[in-house]
Image (cartoon, rainbow, N blue to C red; front, side, top):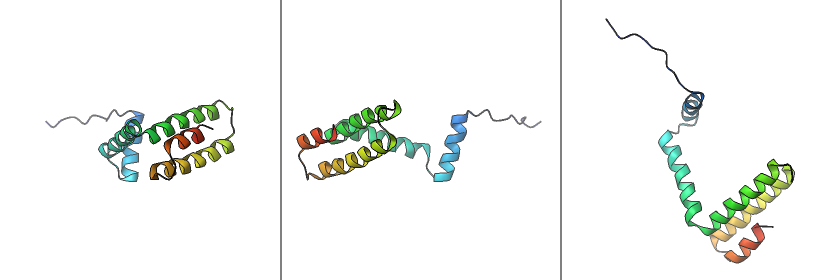
Length: 102
């Protein structure tokens, strides 16, 4: 006799992950690498570390309705621009640190 067919018991997370991987052609390994690469980048680079901390602070303000969506998006664009300038060495870190926290 052959083996009986058993239905697959997949969690919602597993199903969504599989659909995402098929749709965007990413494997779990590649996605994990990207996440760990970002974490390492944030841990080792003071510009990224500052950006990440301040972004989280502003995101909490947005979630608690202390700032509007428009204000958060404006700040986000400003922060990305100033972060890129700091990474390129166009502005010193001290100026970047004070400006991004405004």
